[in-house]
Image (cartoon, rainbow, N blue to C red; front, side):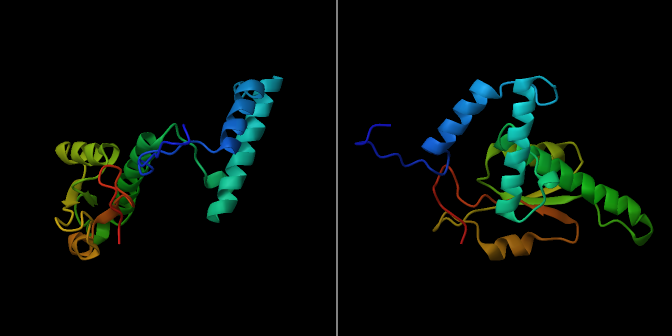
Length: 173
């Protein structure tokens, strides 16, 4: 990017750091193989993936085996939503004798990214979940914590509110 240009869409995406570009270039040059294979490029790919998983786990205080890489945010969001609904159902089935509190309930905002909003709408249309879309403030463009708290139910299994909106630039308080 030219030095005299100012890029102001960091909520949507950011330019890559030169270190990241170098790491990607090395991976595409030396580790382009299938990480499940035994040939050199595949073994190198598996090593890089495992090291990356360990680095991410260390950064977030987690375990490497719990780190899952996806192809992007849409896939990651969908995986989390589907897992939350499945976890609710499993726990509900296990506690059936105590009475299930209804369908899994999910909360998001009315300006949420389509990768979340469309999945929640689909689950709701299919009768697999109930969703509440909390409106943003007309003054601040932010989701108010009190509104999210008011939307909580005993069967709420996930609240997904983006930290910084890629369209408005507003962030959560």
